[in-house]
Length: 535
Ligand SMILES: Cc1cc2nc3c(=O)[nH]c(=O)nc-3n(C[C@H](O)[C@H](O)[C@H](O)COP(=O)(O)OP(=O)(O)OC[C@H]3O[C@@H](n4cnc5c(N)ncnc54)[C@H](O)[C@@H]3O)c2cc1C
Image 1 (cartoon, rainbow, N blue to C red):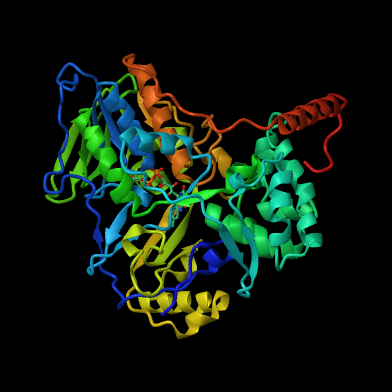
Image 2: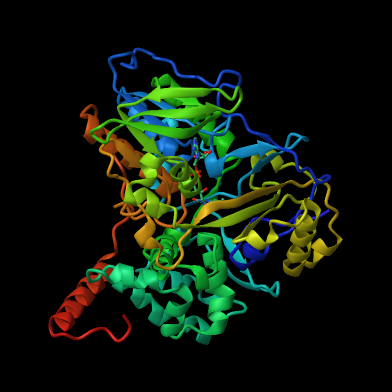
């Protein structure tokens, strides 16, 4: 019997996956029900103007982004309906129960320090606090050796960024010598430089993250043992396949801008049961409707170029249903958007939608059950481990048993006792081409939230130009993009208040000053016809 935990494996260990425990392999799964089960139409008016007089809004996609949009629009009295292809929505944060009744999720979901809007929404729900405390994290190398640990930075004396992160981890690196770590320091300039001049973002975007790290002199060891696994976890792809611009944004948001940014807590159960279920209840109380099992496949427009209706297939009956709309929010992830564009001339004729089909997609794969952090498993004998493989396209053809064996053997590298572990239960979830791959040059293909249809708006963690600061493939970014899409609807239809979106903490004064200085110096150099030797 084994008990490993309190230090959730991330970084390299998560990339090459951890091990497992519990019962026989169970591949069949039942999606956790977060809606009122039998009837997919679950709206209720509750005195809100959701009758014929209220403007009709359709939100397509029931993940964090769609929930953000439908929640705010329901609160503002719109006649709003969310349509999702899955019977029980949740998107990439959905959950399932194995035939043995154990909860599993689409990947272990961390909630970072700067997820202010998610935390605010959960507080508003008035539910028992669903998150653990902020936890320490461990990083293991591909040789199984512990490279470093990340403390809970918010419990340490606060120092200016990035000094705080450096000082508080100084003694915690076991296997990455200071000389290697120090080579990352020059690269920090890129975080100062990213938005400094017009076109600079696009120049970084065309470069791979690997090229960027090399040009700043980061050593192979620091790259392999620290940066590469961190990026695999954060952006689902290795740095040689990632846009340097998105890499900088992501690392800045999650780790660099403030000492506490890397602090992470976890949901004490599945997001689906602990957060989405009460959120859906609240949306219904506000008059919003949630309709699962509706795959949107068609779009109707009028002569003025506005969307007038959507056509959806009822996945249970196979019947086609038509939904009229005054405004529409697509919160459907790139994969869903690509399928919709291919099937609809009205979308394929528009450049921003056509361009979005050029975006690449990465795969994720999750093995085993939620960890001991989940209340449900607190008193279980043995160890419960979740293992996420990112950028896992090559693993997709493996059988579940082969994947579980791979998890155990990788885990045994980190913790030798796992060699003798007996797997008593497991579940493997696959998400082929499910997440956005921010490949070099991808910025030009990503659409903004407003589209050339006057009343059609986009939301999701992949949209461009979201003026908020939460970056990467994050639940906070997705949720905020949904609130922002709701604000665009409010602006368009002219009814109700805008959602109040909490910003991420601003740059610390010394970082803001460094950015300003860099901007001035580069402006002067450019005016004199000179260019940076780097970009
Ligand atoms: C393995 C893994 C681990 C992750 N870990 C973390 C983490 O630790 N922390 C974190 O913050 N984020 C994490 N993420 C990222 C996070 O899950 C996503 O950023 C977020 O869930 C995206 O939400 P979304 O609403 O934009 O899209 P999605 O969740 O993808 O939702 C899109 C919805 O649209 C629906 N849809 C698509 N097409 C149609 C159609 N034609 N008609 C009707 N419905 C349609 C889908 O059914 C789906 O429900 C992880 C993701 C994965 C896969």
